[in-house]
Length: 109
Image (cartoon, rainbow, N blue to C red; front, side):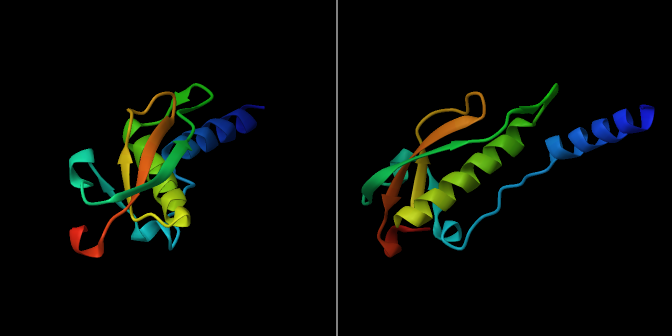
């Protein structure tokens, strides 16, 4: 019984620290910007991302959550034909919303 409990705790600790989200080929083409950097861009839609903010009693780091949310939003924006995302709110309970833009190549940094 103790062995099963130890293994479960070890698994949950590892799972809380790891990311299962992978950036797709389309997502690799998408940049993260602030609203002031998209003046010459065409808004094409919205993306919403969510990830687990905790596993049972173990809270996941805010940095890891933010990275996963960015990755999910970049993947979704790439699938929509966008090349830039802008966060429209702060992370709340593992969720965040983004506006998706198509920006001219010469305005991308």
